[in-house]
Length: 475
Image 1 (cartoon, rainbow, N blue to C red):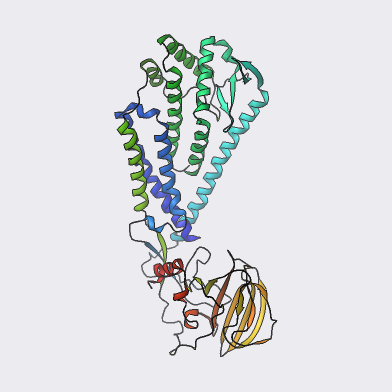
Image 2 (cartoon, rainbow, N blue to C red):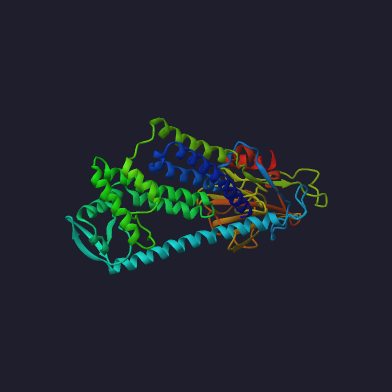
C-alpha cells in the first residue's frame, strides 16, 4: 500500500507539471489561431492527456512506459518467524535520517486526494439536487412544434439529461421576440445534436479525478466555451446580418436575466465581447495542418510525461550479519507438492498484497488439483482468515512445510504422512486472489526460501514472476 501511495504522489506531481505545459502550448496556439477556441476535440484531448499522465502510472505492469532508470525504495527484508510478519528494519543505508516522511507524506496525500474526490462528488450531487428541484416546478409546454419544460426561474435555457436530453426553458423567454426564441432554442438543440451533454459529463468526471490540478479546471472551462462557440457557428451559418444581430441581442438580454448557471448546457457564458465579435464577423476554421499538428503535440507532451516518470519498486536490502547464517550444506531436495509446477510468485518478493515480502512461493493451478506432501512427517490441520485451510507438516529436526489456501484437506491432525501422499486439493480459501497453492518452508522457527528445498522452480516459473524477482533481487 505504501508503494501505491508513493506512486500516487509522484503521478500527482507529474500531472501538476504537465498541466502548465499544456496550458502554455494551447494558450500560445489560441493566440496565433483564434479559431482553435471553437475546437472541442482539442480541449477534450488535452484533458484526456492530463488524465492519462495521472492514471496510467497507477495501473499494474506499466513500468515499460518509463525510459528513465527505476527508482528504488529501500526496504529491509529478512526471514521472520512463521507466525509474525517479516521484519522491516528502520535504519537503511541510503535513506535520510528522518525517513518517516516516506511513509507519512504519501499516505497523507492519498487521504487528501480521496477527500478532494469526495468533495467534487458532493458538489456535483448538490448541483443536480437543485436541478431536480427545478424540474419538479417545471411545466410541460408545446413550443414551435416540440415538447419542452418551462419553469419560472432566473435560469438560462439548458439541456437536462445526458443520453436523452430534454429542453428546459425559463418563463422569461416569452419576453423575447419569436425570432429570438427560435434562435435560442436552435442553439440548445444544436448542443443535443452534437452530443455536447456526453462530452460535458466526461469533462466533469475528468475534472473530479484531477481536482487538484488548476489546468484541469481551465481546460474544462475552455471545452464548455468551445461548445458554445461551435453551436453559435452552426446556428448562424448562412444567416443574414439582421438575424445575427437578433441572436446577439438575445444573448445579451439572457445574460442580464439569468442567475448563477446550474449543471447543464446553458445559453451564455464565456467572454461576452469576444463572442459578440465572432457573431458579427463570423468564425473561420483553423488550418487543416493545425488540426493535425495540435493532437500530435498533445500526445507528445503526454508521452514525454509518462516516459520521464520513473517507476517505483522496492529495493530489498541484504540481511544483517546478526541473522543466522544459511546452513553450510544444502538440504536434501524434496518432492514437488504439485505434479505440474507453475511458479507465479517467488520468496521475498514485495507486492501490494505482500508489502513486507512474500513468505513462500505461489504455485498456480486449477481448483481441485491434488496437493502432495513434500517429505515424510506428522501433519497438523488448521484454518484462518488469511491463509484459509492450511496443512503444516513437521519433518523433524526443526524443519516444517506449510500448504495454504487449500480447497479440501484429506487428513487430520496427528496423522503420519509420507512424501508424495495426497494431503488435499488446490483452492482459494482465505485471502487469495484465485486458486493457487501457497507453500512455505520453516527451519528452526525462521522462514526459508523454498528454492533451497525444491528443484526446477526457475524452469517452471512464469515470465512475470521471473521479471519481478529480477527487478527486486537482480537475479
